[in-house]
Length: 87
Image (cartoon, one colour):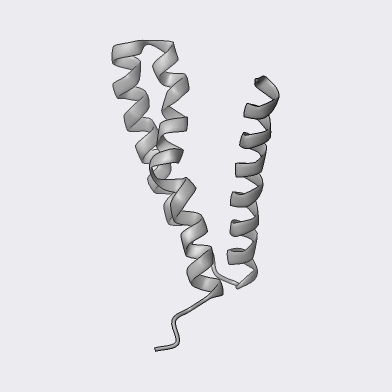
């Protein structure tokens, strides 16, 4: 059970790192703003969840913040950069 969770976390981290490297190799860093937005979301969730659930809520807050924004936005930016529309 723990091995499968660890494998998924490492896989997601690998994909996000790859997308960030692809975007950075294009000589622009559009992934800076999503990281800042995700940090703000995580801080908000940590305050909210910590108030209701204690230390467990603070531990779960980064997971919820990344799921809400960073885990879909960075791959979408990478996809948009790799395959722009030819209109």
